[in-house]
Length: 442
Image (cartoon, rainbow, N blue to C red; front, side, top):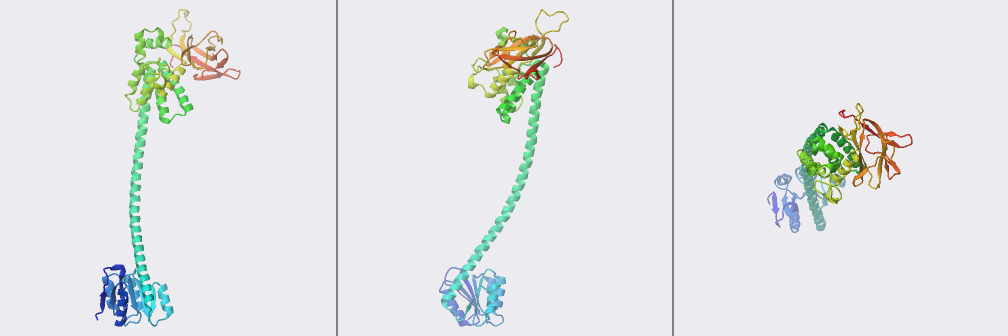
C-alpha cells in the first residue's frame, strides 16, 4: 500500500474530508472503512511526513492521529498540524498514554479529543461527527469575523467619507449663511434708501412712515408674528407711501387734509399710489410680499377702499394690519406749510396744520382736549373716518402741547401713538405733541 490513500465515497469535500495517520495498515484500513460508510472523504497516511505533505495540499475538517508512531509522537505531529491548519479538529488515538498528558494537551488546545484503543464504533463516529461540527462552526465564525472586519473597514471608510461630506456641508452652510446675511443687509439698505428718498421728498411722510413702523412693530409683538411675516409687515410700514414720491406736494397736502374736496381726476391719480408703491418695491428682490401688502393698505373691510375695491377676507391679513397702523399712526404734523388763515397778525407765529388720529372701534363720540383748547371736550370733536378710526385736523402754532382723548364724554385716554408721554399729576399720562415751525428740520 502506498504512503497515502484517499477513499471518496461521495461528492462532498471540504467539511467532510478527514486525514487519518497510523503506522499500522490494519488500523488505517479499519478507520477508512468505518468512516467511509458515513460518507466522509477519508485520506490516510502511514507516517507523519506523508501526512504533513497532505496538509500542505488540501484542507481537512478532522485530523486523526495515532500517538505511537516512528519518528514523532502523535501529540508532536498534531502540534505541527495545528500550525498548518489551525481550524482542523485534532483527535488523538492511543493505547498507552498518561492521562495527565492528554488532559494537558486538550487544555492547551493541541487536541480536541482522544480515543482509547480499542474503541467503540459508536463512540468513534460520535466523536468524529462532533469534530466535523466544531470545524464547521469555527469556519463560520471565522467567516463572520472576516465579514465583520470587512464591514468595519467599509464603515470606517463610510464614516470618513461622511465626515468629509459633513465638513463640506458645514462649509457650504457657512458660505450660504454669509450670502444670506449679505442679502439681508442689501435688502435692509434698499428699504432704508427708499425711506430716505421718501424723507427727502416729503419729510412729513417720512416721519409718518417711522410712526407707522413703530405701530406695526408693536402689532407684530402682540400677535407674535413669525419672523418672515414680521419683516414683511415692518418693511411695508416703512415704504407704504413710497408711491407718493413724484406727486406735487400741494396735492398731497390737500389730499391729507380733506380728500373729498379734490377733483375726481386728482383723487383717481392719488388713489393709484399703492399700485405705484408696489411697482417700485418690485425692483428689489425678495420684496414681492411687501408690494402686495402696500397695494392693500388703503382697502376697506366694506369694499369702499382703493385701488382694487377688495373687501372682507379678500384683503391680505398683513395689508389689514398695515391699514390700521397707517390710520392709527397719523397723529403728527402732516405738512410743514402754514395753515391757510387770514387771522394771523404780522409777526405772530404761523399756524401749522396738525392731524390727530386715534383708534376707538366701539366709541360713539371722541373729542380731543389739551393745551390747545383749554382742556374743553366740547371744543374739538373728532370725526370717524373709517372702521373705528377717528380724526381731526387742527391749526396749531409751533410749540409743545399736552393732550388726551375723551371717549363717549366720559373716558379719558392718552394717545398710544404719541412719541412722548407726560405725568399729569393725577396718576394718568398725557400725550405730548411737539409742533415744529415751518421749515424747521425734523
